[in-house]
Length: 217
Image (cartoon, rainbow, N blue to C red; front, side, top):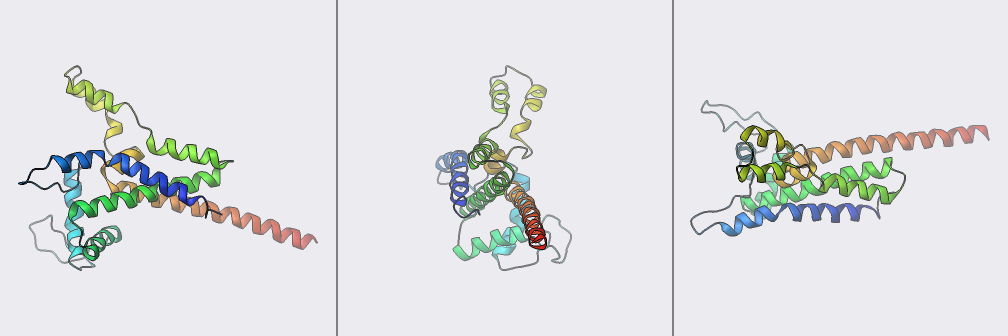
């Protein structure tokens, strides 16, 4: 059903990834010889926590201990996402920046696929599903305007804080793809789960109708 349509979602996912990569490329180019860009532009404390587990997966561990406390502790934590990212980093010998961009790309494609499959199942035409997916991925709020006004000292900190909600907390899909793949990948998997549930419901109804027709005959 979706074989010929998946390519559109993959291309669109790559497109939103590339658009969101502009700040990363800029930061990487600006790094001098004494500094290395690690590939992160937001949520530094969250990212450090992620990589405290990813680094353990890179070393070959399947169960993680908590590096964020000085108290001795045993490895009891399991996280399949961090395990996958660390495995990719280890197998392909990627830098932290490279594996982070790979993670961002996977998150962008999965998020696009999740919404697109769901839209195809719900909306009456493929064209509507494609437009809805593009709007879902590329639209945002007016946070950039409030940020610009704040940077020019035209509005106060409280107004800037209230007006930039769309640029924080992972509320919008584009912001998720741009700043935190842990948001976009999880969001995409949830949407795929909804889509598969809906697909199963539709197929079950079709099978029930077919059974009724056979019984009637």
